[in-house]
Amino acid sequence: MKKLFPVSLIILFVAVISGCSKQTETLEVATLNDYYPLTVGKTFLYRLDSTVLASFGSSLAVKSYLAKDSIESTFTDNQGRLSYRIFRFIRDTAGLKPWQPAATFVATPTQQTVEFVDNNLRFIKLHAPFTEGYAWKGHSYIDTKSLNTTVGYLDEWQYEYRNVGMASKILNTTFDNTVTVFQQDETTPPGPFDRNNYQQRNVGTEVYAKGVGLIYKEFLHWTWQITPPPAKYEDGSYGVKLQLLSHN
Image (cartoon, rainbow, N blue to C red; front, side, top):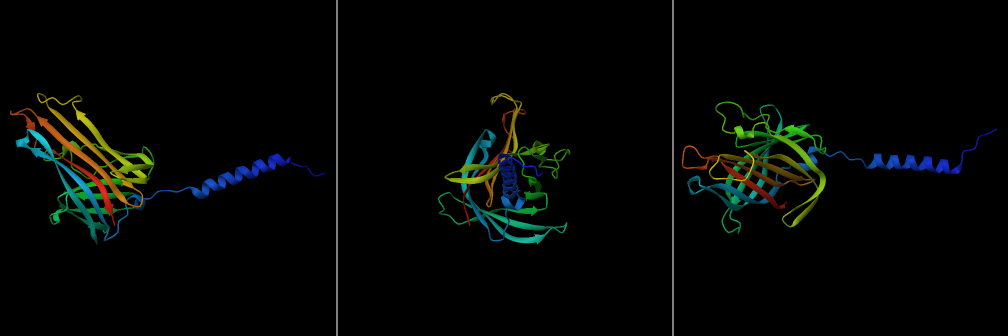
């Protein structure tokens, strides 16, 4: 005698199988190339706000520019890896003066990371996988501990993914799918700024948009030194803020 199953159980079973199938079909794993696409000829136009020393170190000032980053060519680095040479040009925010060369960068994508060389310092900007809370040491290739280092303030920075896949608005443009790389936000010793006491401030955050690349960067480092007098910001105190205006 054949055993009959209730029709309701059969419908439930089919629905569960169908739901699992849909989840599997729509699962996407973001790649490094998704958030950091590299193509020769690609250009990015940013608003650049640069924090610099002013008044012989007694204060900080912000100077603003237009910055154009252009992926100019590829080459093979000394480890045999494909790398991209990026030129930066700057001019006044009104766009009245000609572009002037400002810096050269190198980006090297690997299966697990994107390395970025800036001013002879090699940063690990991105690291697979793109998972909320995933963390890595972004300055592993940088000498932060020797007696001769000038970038000891970069020591032990731990980069961390936040707001993975969330929308971000930069100036007047909203990007639907972005990832924030939190790098640092530290004041030593903690507390409000007091010109009578030593203090150091370090901030670092970058935001990348899927299919675009870097859309926002904020970096700030300053040290207020009270000895020897007069008190002032140390040489090497500086900051950079980039906000994407357009890209080709």
